[in-house]
Length: 167
Image (cartoon, rainbow, N blue to C red; front, side):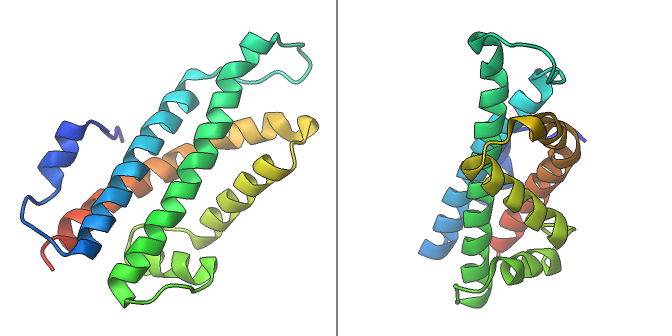
């Protein structure tokens, strides 16, 4: 499935009526998710498989660094978006990440709580524990396993946001 990220497409999806401040916050957070996802998808589709045996020049490593940074950012903004949805749906926040992801699953925005927990863990591992001997596996996760999950989640989030404007 090809996901379009242009602001023109978003404006056709998002209702034009005025909304509550909370719905406006939801729409603003979705815009950040959409932009972050667009950059992540671009990087994931652009990089070639990483060869851990090869000595890369610093310039050659930049696409991989961009991929990792964009993945981290995408996960972070999705989690903030999920928290905003949680507030919109329940008028409460502060649950555990797993509970928040469970709500996202019930709403049909994500399909697999465990995979999102894993992506969050990988994001944390990348950010806090750079492990060169595992980097090939991480790049493979970012470019194959997680890419369809994130694009599918963005599409579901667009659908949710459009439907939430009618409430």
